[in-house]
Amino acid sequence: MKPFKKLRRNRRLLMAYYVDSQYYNNPRIKLHNWVGNPTPQDFWIPRFLEHKELTMGKRISIFSVFGLRYMMRIDRGDVKIFVARENVHRSNWSEYDDLCLGEKCLDLSVGFDYHIDDERYIRLPLWVMWLFQPDVTYKGIKDFCDRVNNPDNSSYADRKFCSFITSHCDIGRTELFEEINSIGKIDSAGRFMHNCDDLQQLYDDDKLKFLKRYRFNLCPENSDCEGYCTEKVFEAISSGCVPIYWGSENKPEPNVLNPDAICFVKVGEKNPRETLDKIKRLNENEKDYDEFSHQPRLLPDAPDVIMQYIIDFENKLRYIIKNS
Image 1: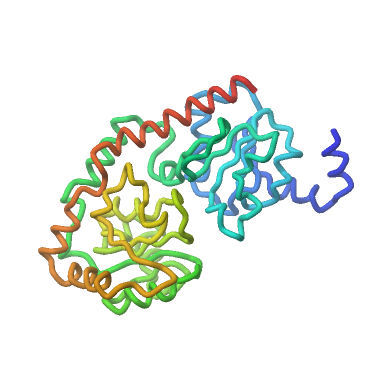
Image 2: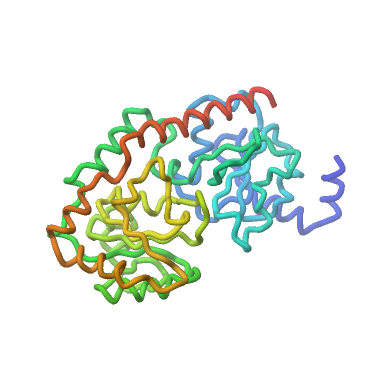
């Protein structure tokens, strides 16, 4: 009870506890420090818990980075799960740099990092939750990979040059945008460098439908860190775009993605002329573009790797909830 006595003496924390808490439609599942305007993907873990019937009558609290870490200590849930929704190794997320593994009350930490030696940690990258429903089967994953790798998923003639969708001016994005924009006009449909309203007006904010109009998609991460790979590059290849990518030390998901099918760039320093010339050549030469874009985007073992992520996550959840 000591944390709650302390909380009563601190009105700010008390208010934050209720403001930063969201109830999922299952009263046994509670979200803390979550996103302000959640999408269906934001509720992937609660939906996964329900689909796999993993709650076992326990109160499960799920925490992220958009609020006070202290919430984890005062919450009365039976099982406490932390989800690294951002690159927690950036200075602005330094409070969560240890993936909350320093909290004795934590039962499971879910993140991007490789090589974390802690039985309470599991790697489940955000893009898995973004691309696949919680009830996905191996066949569904295999069908997705086959569709992405099908040469018919990409085309040259009926597409414009390059798209870009982001809301924030992270370090180096302005310079990168200007470099690529010197090759051809980039249609920027997000708040940053906004010059195109088609995403909202023609496609009702359906990002994948919008991307299908373009040969390339400029999709840098907001920071560069080993293992930190979000949905951006996967949305590009799913829509048949060639990704112009930066992030994850330019080695994103090496067991899943074919690096030869991605145009890698740099942020924070001037890109070599050969990098820009390559993008220019592909954009101006249909034969070269088709040869590049028709490569398999996903490696042969990608379905097995993705399915194993989900199986391992289910097994880990089942174990910690059962033994909590």
